[in-house]
Image 1 (cartoon, helix red, strand yellow):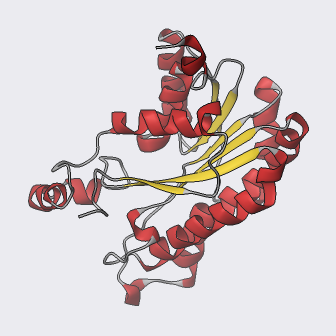
Image 2 (cartoon, rainbow, N blue to C red):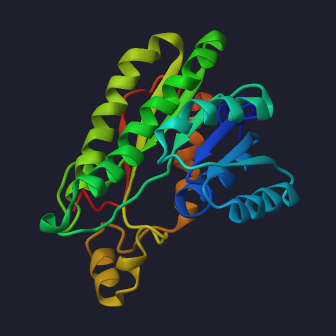
Length: 257
């Protein structure tokens, strides 16, 4: 392949902050971005896991640092941004991947659990991005990647706050793009299908349900974490410079069938 084409996907000299990086989709995104050349900052609550992933990335020739913090605490958001920026001096790419789904029946939802879900899934992505946008604007380039869901457009059982938050993420992605793309900052979202993560463990523990979901996809299988690599790198790289405000379904054709 022509070197200039390959350079469209290169992330050398870029720095990416990935929230929810202690496991699942966030950990996989951090690994993929590091393999494309980016220096990565791993953000999550579990220091041991973050340190282990950072060491693994470094052993594979990548560059990674980590920051343990709780995005559920709104009072920490500004300081998290300050601390993250101090690690490399800049952040070019923000992956808003941290999230929660408590899977409560509608009758069991409380104000506390509603706020918990909406705070982590919807409020934190905007306010963390807003803290980081000024330094992206100065360089005229930035990439924000949110995590949407199949539930951004359809309802699943026992997921009222989660569905509300992920419907909101789709519109938030458009609104962030409208606000910041004129400054060279692209904002897009990935809507994953069914992938095996801590968040989806209650689903994948049921083999019959897992097989049923796989059969509902056009490809006949559920997602594997490696399936995230290409789209994550694409949306973080110059290859996607004219794409903004979009939610791309990475679901094996679940929504097409």
